Length: 167
Image (cartoon, rainbow, N blue to C red; front, side, top):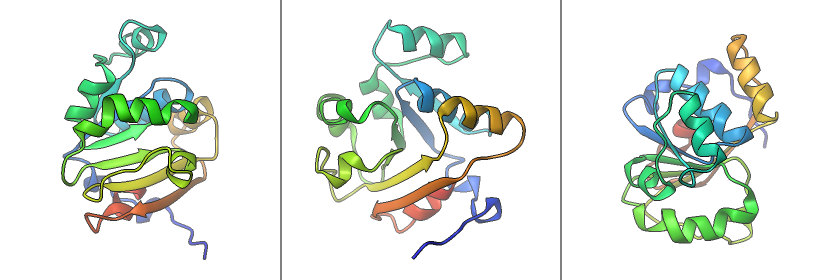
């Protein structure tokens, strides 16, 4: 059953005291990182060291970290890299940083649905999928608007996964 949520259903306080690790700084990663930071959320960007995305994140005022470092400090880890890279990056850099109560977030359900990633039982797993390319998402935010998005909860360890996804 489809349920429509509105801004009034989302409470940023659900992530206000958390660190959000944005893994990847391409189209979606950049938009999510900037929008969250501009909303007062503590954001850390995790990318391959000294690559184009590293320089882009620096140019936008972030102090980029390696994917592993960002995953270690992130309470919410948003995996915003191409689906084809999810499994390798998760196994190599993210999996060992998952501790009780962290949240894994994806913008697409492919890796979870088809088993490329098998998260441990002690984390929340959610999807937040804006129905827009990242630059349009950022543009809408800067104009004080939003874009339609899909959310889903795959695993609700904390009992608050939906609230986290909505935030």
